[in-house]
Length: 233
Image 1 (cartoon, rainbow, N blue to C red):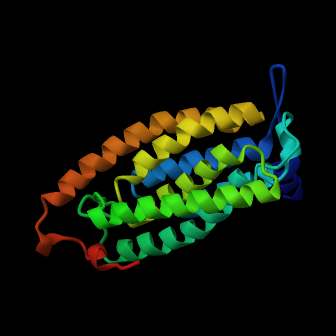
Image 2 (cartoon, rainbow, N blue to C red; image 1 turned 135 degrees about the horizontal axis):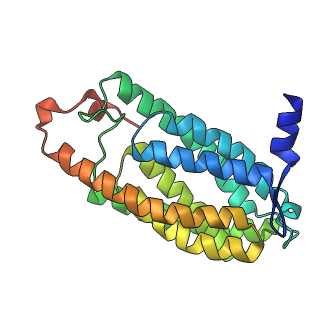
């Protein structure tokens, strides 16, 4: 057991021409599994995502694992901390909704488009979040604060939107992926950059699935809506 834990934290995976960081690869696999379960609106998406958050925090808080940059990617590491916090929120919210009956199609929640007020809230949070993240990342010496600040802020908004069941969170993820792939390639985190490419394709599918599910939910009368609609933040 200790050998497995040691490998998960410090191990490597041999590949042609070199090796990959085991925690980076495994952490991203947990992240992908969480995304798949999230698309299906299953509660297990949150605890599985938490495992990946822990592993990836270790990876990005130790810049030497990159092999290209010496500085930690604190924006990437910081978003894992936020993921963990929001995952607890999402886990509780989706579990409560599931116990109350969930969505008519079997999902833990019924996805919906955010209201105009909620969209303005996301934009406002995005502006404030980016500004704060950029200043903090500059001060602590993170690599690439301009792009990292957006990856961190966008990830926060997307995860919160998923917890709330807003379809728009997939669109935010698309914007995060576009910036993330370039940043991670330049920083030498090739497994994570590769996973971002997988995520990008997956996000398009997830968006289509949630749009279809939200349309189905909209056809249900208010009296037939599952109890999760009564769950508050």
